[in-house]
Length: 380
Image 1: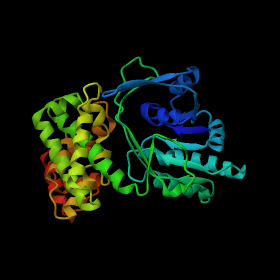
Image 2 (image 1 turned 90 degrees about the vertical axis):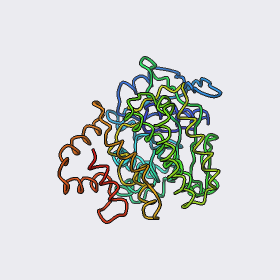
Image 3 (image 1 turned 180 degrees about the horizontal axis):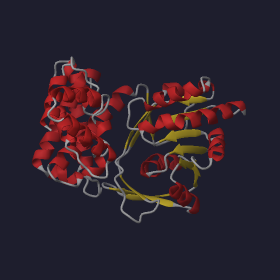
Image 4 (image 1 turned 30 degrees about the vertical axis):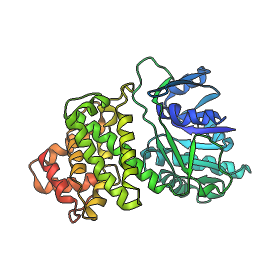
C-alpha cells in the first residue's frame, strides 16, 4: 500500500506521516521545498520524538519525496498509483494544489485505476469538501475516481530545535477523526484513525476549544510579555483570560450540539493540561502567527463569538482575544505586519475603522457582534 501526502513539513512527518507508516503504508511526501525533498530521498529513517506523559521515540522508514514544483510528471505518477492521498499544507494552499490533483486523478481514471481516498488534514472545518470543490472546477467527473472524506486533526507540533534534520518533536496526544459514511464499508485501514458518522460536532469542538484556546494563550501571553506557551498558562491572569474564552465556547458547544457541560469541561481541562506540557518548546510567536487568518470570519474567535452574539449570549472574552490579536506585532510574521499596517492606516478615522472591522472579521455593521469588535479595533 502507498500513501501520497502533500506537505512534508513537521506536521506531515510528525503526525499524519507517522500514523500512515504505522498502518503499513509506503510514504511518498510531495512538497515544493527542494532541500526537504532531497533530505527525504537521501535518508532511510527519521525519528518522531513524542514528549510528555508516556514519552517514546518512533522510527519512520519506507518513505521518499517528490518535488511537486520541479517534477510534475513524477507527482502525476504518484497520484495515479497511490492508495490514499492526504494533505497537511494549510487551508489556503488547498486551492493551489487542486489543479494538480485534478490532473492526476483524471489520468488515474483514464488509466483504469481504482478509486482513491482523499483526505485533507487541515485546521479548518470541512477542508476536504473545499478541496473537492476546487478539484471539480477542473475535473467535474472526479467523484468517479476519488472518495472525499472530511477529517479533524489534533496534535501539537511546535517549532523544532535547530539541527534536528528530518526528526520531529511532538506531543504524545493525537486525534485523527474521519467521517466514515463516504466510504461505506470499504474505508482505508488506518488504525490511528477514529471513524465517526458525523464529524461536525467533533471538528467544531476541536477548533473552538483547541485552536481557540491555543491562539488565545498565544495572544494573551504575547500581550503579557511571555514567550513560552506553557509559561503563559502559569501566569494567573493569562490563564484566567484563556479559561474565560473557553467558558464561552463551552457554552456555545453545549447549546449547539448538546454536549454535556461536564463532558465539555473535562475536554477543556485536558486541553489546558496539554498546553501546559513543559516538554514542548512551543512559543507564543509560533502559535500566534498569521493573525489575519485567525481573526477572520469562520475562524477560532469570530466564528464562535458571532454565533454566541446571534443567540444573545456573552462573547466578551472572545472579543478580548481578538483585541489581543490586534496587538500581535511580530517582525518576521508577514500577516502580523500587514495587520499593523492596516490598523495604522485606519487609526483615528471612525469610518475607516468600521470598514476595517468588516474587512478583517467578515462581520457586517448590522450584526450584533459588530459594536464589541468596533470597540476593540478603536482601542488599538
